[in-house]
Length: 171
Image (tube, rainbow, N blue to C red):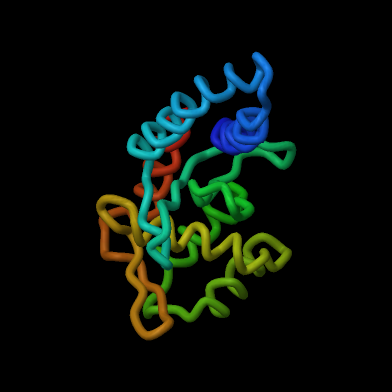
């Protein structure tokens, strides 16, 4: 479990404990604002974007899980489950887009990634990488009319690796 996921879980537990009338409740009421501020500061330091519904922020970070390293897309409200993209899928999507001669539909990207990896990934895994690249600074991917294309770059695959490494060093 990654740090921010653990922090969101800790905030939920502290909110529950803060309703107690014991010493633990008093301590929870003192710690809760500090922990919330720490999560907000972490979000400011990472790649983030407003949520589509405008109700909060979505942050991206690299975590190490039992399946290896993953790019995690997490809503900072803590009300929904984080989406994860394994490093192998991330790299394969970057390679597919960098070799594409035209903008690709999501299904075309997923088919090409599936051929490359030998197994078709879950669509949310590919979407996490695409959304991350669309909101990175500078953006690596543009979406137009349900098609994705990588912004021309001398080495977009290398740039995707640079973004991964930058996120990895933040936590």
